[in-house]
Image (tube, rainbow, N blue to C red; front, side):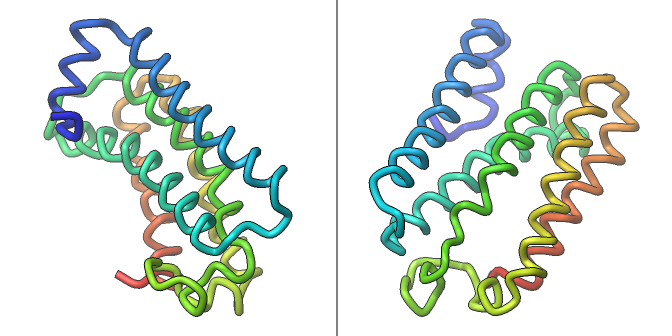
Length: 173
């Protein structure tokens, strides 16, 4: 039941967004705290820890990106406030994602990763794609605050394209 999006959407409507905001902030804070503790305790994280970190970041991004997509496709009712809230979390996590790709955490060191070795051999290109995603996520947050569904849909599409562009070159599917 915890993984059912409809369940959580209804819970938000029933209990109000303040509770869910607290939960999301707590989750994001926990991930960020973990990253700070990891950075403080070890200059070079273990490759497995880096993979877990980045997988966690992308899980949170997906958690917030998917409901926006469902609203844009008409699969669930459009809720401007929910889109704005989800977009803020996507933006926040987009700023932390690149930290999960330290040298030595690729498929040569860890088997349970979808990251291609090209991330580290073409770092400048990878970093540029990550920056594109971050900029698109920032813009999505800005547009979402306006509540215009058509504008949100257009920017959501652009943001999704930045994800696809990076996956195409740097992720095994």
